[in-house]
Image 1 (cartoon, rainbow, N blue to C red):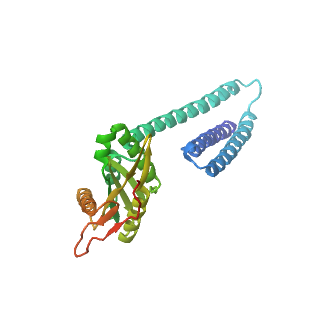
Image 2: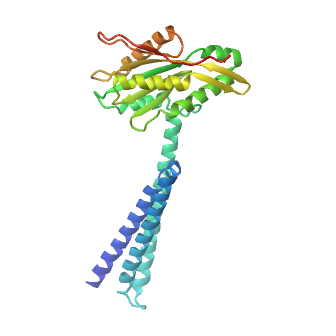
Image 3: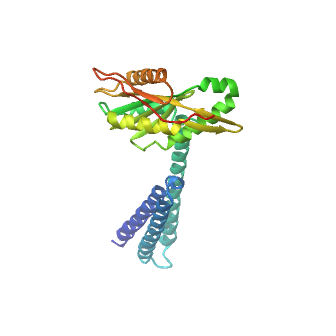
Length: 283
C-alpha cells in the first residue's frame, strides 16, 4: 500500500515537471517577436509557472521520500530514477523545441523573399493550398512604373534598394490572418485580403498607392517612383490562376491610363473605376 502511494506521488511529481517544462516552452515561443508589454506579461507567467511547478514537485517529493527510512536501499534507487526521468524529459523537450525552431527557420527561408522580407511565390502557393473554398478574397496586383529603366540606367544595385524600400512600405499593410503581401517576381507584388469587399479593396489600393508613389532616396540618387494596381474579387469557387490573371490584366489597364492609378477587373456588367493618386513629381 505504501509502495503504491509512493509510486503515485512520484508519477504526479513527474507529470507536474513535464507540464512545467511544456508551459515554459510555450510561453517563450516567439518571445523575441513580442511587443514589450507582451514580453513583460510572458515573463511574469514564466516566473509563476516555475515557482508553482518547483513548489509542487518539492512537496510531492518530500511526501514520497518520507515513506523511506535512511537505511532503505530503495531510497537511493527511487531518487536516482526520479532525477534521471526529469533530466530525460527536459532533454526531450529541449530537443523537440530545437527541431521546431530549425523547422521554422527553414520555413522562413523557403517562404520569404530575402530582399524585401515579404512572402515569395512559395509562400503564395502555401496560402492558396490552405485557403478555404468559397472564401471572399480581394486580389491586388501591384507593379512599379519605370522600374526597368531605373535598373538599366542606375544599375541593379539601385533597383534592389528601391525594391527593399517598397517592400518595407508594403509591410505596414500586412495583417496576420487577414491580409497577406507577396513579391512574385521583379517589381511585381500581390496583396490578398480575406473577407474584403470591393469598396474596402479600392480603399486599400488608394492607401497603398499614396504610400508607394513618392520620392525615394537611393544612396546618391533621388527618384520619383509611382505604381499601378489591378484589383479583382473572388466569386464562388476560388481559382488562383484566374484571380491572378484578372488582377494582372486590370493592373495593365491602370498602367495605360497613367501613373498612380488603380483599376478594377470588369466583372459582369460592372464598369472598372480608376482613381488618380494626387502626388507632385520631383523636380
